[in-house]
Image (cartoon, one colour):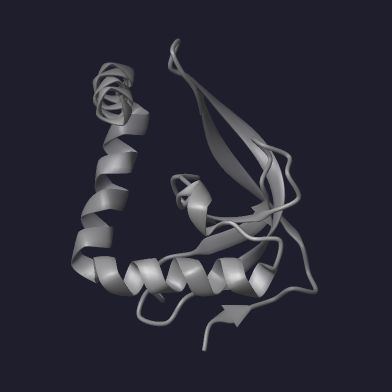
Length: 125
């Protein structure tokens, strides 16, 4: 069972990336703390989707501010948490740890981030 305090909101600082200029903005977002089973060493937060403003909930990793993919977002908080938990179980703790470390390197190095986003955008075409 995940640990979620849906009664007490808290402010998290999320990193928002605006391509193509690769402007990383730190923005305060109101959300709920979530701890997922097997990933107790990490803190996640549940918040409204501030990018699309579509009423759906989104789950983000707290130290990087990076969010789970949009396709797991839901109008239900519990469904969003369950979807994210299922993804993490597939990914595994070792792989997730590497992804968080890579995200932290990208945040500190705009040139790396720009290269990464170019690859992501090229793969979508």
